[in-house]
Image (cartoon, rainbow, N blue to C red; front, side):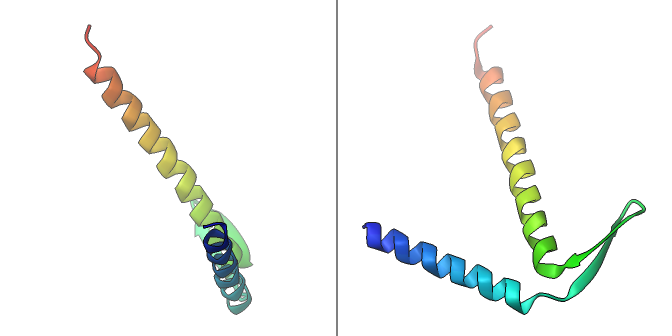
Length: 73
């Protein structure tokens, strides 16, 4: 089973490297008056991590809220 995990990791890293090398063009992103110029692959990776963090935090907050509402008073 360890070899299956290793193959999955190698394929995943290869896909990420292909994405990075195919998206080296610089893009400009603007939000609330702030502007950022960076390669598309960097912006996409940053947005992915930001989404994972905020999504995970929201899930944890909702889970805590549900558990607190089910607790007898």
